[in-house]
Image 1 (cartoon, rainbow, N blue to C red):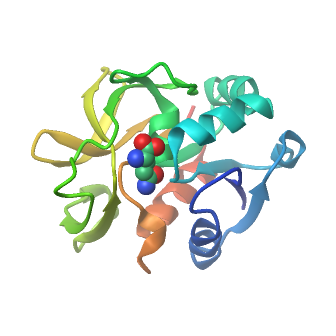
Image 2: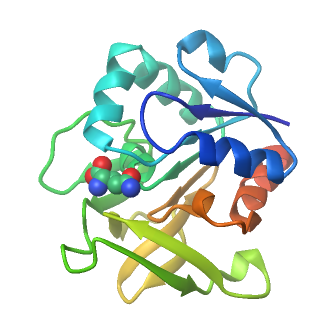
Length: 192
Ligand code: GLN
């Protein structure tokens, strides 16, 4: 399986390693031509305004919007989740807007800039998933086609809409590859 990692800014190499550990071939995507032949794409964490500006500049916004609507699997982590969201509270920054979700940037506030916590994610089977949050967003509202997979109180931190998966945390920063494998499983199955 050949999966891209959008390589404009942010935590790229960690996703490359996690994909390889999960048994996929990882491709660093720096320009549009690198999307050819990929079966899915990870949009990493970083700074969403910067990633959005660069995506616009290099033509990724239009291309990925069309591919996403066509069923191309994408997994956005942290800033990548923000890129997938339709609604970003208080911001008109560039985005793909493919997922019917509303996000709050830096939603956990200053006191909890960065933290780790065990999440219960039933889709991943047994055992808690250690999740690393870094100036993380959360999802405050989802449309009817969105499956909520994990939350902290009323803050949604993992959700899926068909071919699109979004996490507020950084699954690439721990050795647990279950979430990457989960993404690969619906890449190979096709999502319709
Ligand atoms: N706070 C960042 C943003 O709003 C996201 C942080 C991250 O990706 N770790 O873009």
